[in-house]
Amino acid sequence: MTTLAAIEEARDRIAGAAIRTPLVRLQVEDAPAEIYLKLETLQPVNSFKIRGATNAVLLASATDRAHGIVTASAGNMAQGVAWAARELGLPATILVPDTAPEAKLAAITRLGGAIRKLPYDEWWQTIVAGRAEGIDGLFVHPAQDPAVIAGNGTIGLEILEDLPDPDAVVIPYGGGGLTCGVASAVKALRPATQIITVEPDGGAAMVAAMRAGHPADAEFRPSFVDGAGSRRVLDSMWPLVSPLVDQALAIGVDEVATAVRVLAQRVRVIAEGAGALAPAAALSGRAGPGKIVCVVSGGNINLGKLAQILLETDA
Image (cartoon, rainbow, N blue to C red):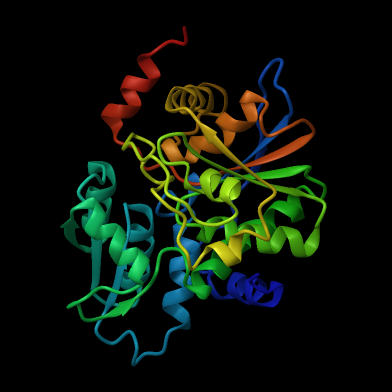
């Protein structure tokens, strides 16, 4: 578990980059719970990733980061790293899977990041290995870097300051860094709060790991929910997240699309697929009753896909 002290220090360190995002009530008739949204979509890079990326880059020595910053990301961590590198006048190299959406690639370029596309399996192996072969620069791991986790944990501090007694916090699960950070803060301050992870059903690696008691292979189907889900929980993350997670859920992409529409209609929030996972779980009732906080992790969705989802109607 990341220490509360490390998370509190991260909050001070990143204060000039990440903003304190609001926690707002989602008003839906006949909702199965009292649902709150932690709107990380409002960060400067439209996702929570600016928190961990900035903390990691600022913690590194000038010598370590002298040749620039490198990361492997489907898009949002890439933007966080590119933002932090640009602020320090450093180059950023971003390794992305060939499935990364154009909206995220365009944002990386806009922030000055240099993109290198890799086949998904090769990209995933870079994350598993925790290094980028043949590329100079400080490698910031998108999930397992302790400084990234501590930066992500600042979300948990803010949640409990705004709502001291949530029954559950629901978190989209991708690489595990968001879950580990938020859950470390929440469990340190309010152990009774349940931590629930949620993934698309075409990449429910945490669900598979929880059932098996260890990382296990999961069926993977690419979808517009590109910022969460994977083939397997990272072996390096399992001992960190497993003591913190009370329940793991898998949600169908149709339910996620419905949640994207609900957020747009009810709170005028644009959420990407991963960002709508937690609200989808809460709206389904599977996150339980009571006060449920949903981490809306990001809003970087292709506008064409967003338009398609908004024009669809529920059956």
